[in-house]
Amino acid sequence: MVSKFFVKKNNKVGRYCTAACHLSAGEAIFCEEAFSVGPKSGSPLLCLGCHKALDEVKTCNKCRWPVCNEECSKQEIHSKNECAIFSSVGVKFNLDGDASAQLECITVLRTLLESERDATRWNDEVVVLEDHTNDRKARPEFWSAEQINVVDFLYEKCKLRSRFKKDTIQKVCGILEVNCFEVITEEYSSIRGLYPKLAIMSHNCVANTTHSKILNEHKMIVRTTVAVKEGDELYSSYTRSTESTLLRRVKLWDSKFFHCQCQRCSDPTELGTHLNTLKCTKCDNGLIFSADPLDNDAPWNCNLCDNAITAAGVQKVYKVVQDELEELEQIPFGPEKIEAAEKRLKQYKSFLHPRHAFKLALWHELMLLYGRAEGYSLDMLPDILLERKAEMCRNLLQTYDVIEPGYTRVRGVTLYELHVALLLYNRSQYEYRVLTLDKFKAEMKKVADILEESGKILSLEPEGSQEFTIGLSALNSVAQLRESVEKLKEESENKIDE
Image (cartoon, rainbow, N blue to C red; front, side, top):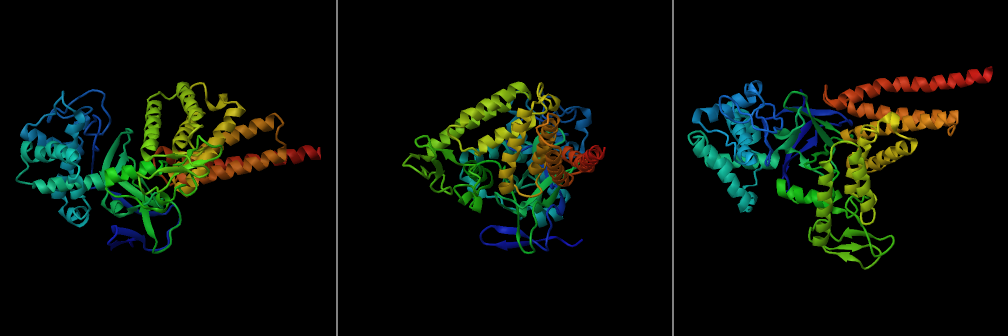
């Protein structure tokens, strides 16, 4: 099979990928099996078989490390890796110890063992990945903890000194930290996976590719989100695109050891989305931006008056809002969460730009709540809330069209939610004679177009996934919706003839 991408190299970013030919939007570029998967750094307690989060410790009968049950203890990812090592040396999980610290070694160990099983791939694809050893050493607190919890533990306690050098273990720690991608399991747990080909792609805060995990496998499929010309660079995103520049750049430095200087990060307005913009509280219409978004210590100034805020002051505000949004996440999915989210939106209106990233997060939450939460099911939503749901969807799409354009999962889901809101709203407006028949048909044609676009995007997701199911359903429903609009036309013409 002819490769759709080339790997190139320069002095600025090292290796990177370019399109080997013209690629259409939504086109599959490659599918890659993970070299290794396992708990991420700072992981909560989870099963080492299925990676499901555990509320209480249950252990494998053989090695005495966390698993759900006997079935999970027999899964090869556990039995062939850490279980075999731990049981042979008698190293048991400390039930009273810090679960997160103890799980730090698991993915590293799995990677080391896989390097023995697949030496060719290890040498060709993995060992050449960046590990940023010097940058990691410059953080003595983390380096020391990793040395104790992972390197010394595997080398000394697990008696692997005859198989792996300390430098090799430490290098693997770095490779995983810098190159892994988040993997959401079938149990909705967040773990990490090492995908060497995907890791070659440079980061950009407006990526032109997306990746999705294939259901019940550790394979990742990588697709374009927009059309890419032959020779153009292929980018992935190492962060959540919906976060503001201030937060994205901090996370990229903390986890990937580079300062992003992409076009979006360099623009104080974030390409006109204003995801990082504050409202001035000293004048009526002023907006406050960073004087230099590539400098985290630069002052923030109003564009209309002399109001200025220090970087530390902005970071303090962000920390307060982040804490409040994290509290909101802990509220169960339901009416209480709707009330809390709407309250926060009103609260933030005075100092956040109308399209700030924090408000975007709340809109996304409310978009899903309206129509699903108890007391707010679709058949119970009054027109005013259907209209509000549609408005939030449009606001989200306006931003996604800039930061996640094209065939992206989040656009597909949002388009689907928009179609639902507009479908019910327009039906209601027609039933109450607010809309004429012609206007209703015109609006319903727009709804069908929105549904079709959503279906095209989501049907590209891995087969069996929730998004794929929604996508297929959407495509099947488009024809029915268009047919129902045509029937309205026929019925109207028949009434006129009568």
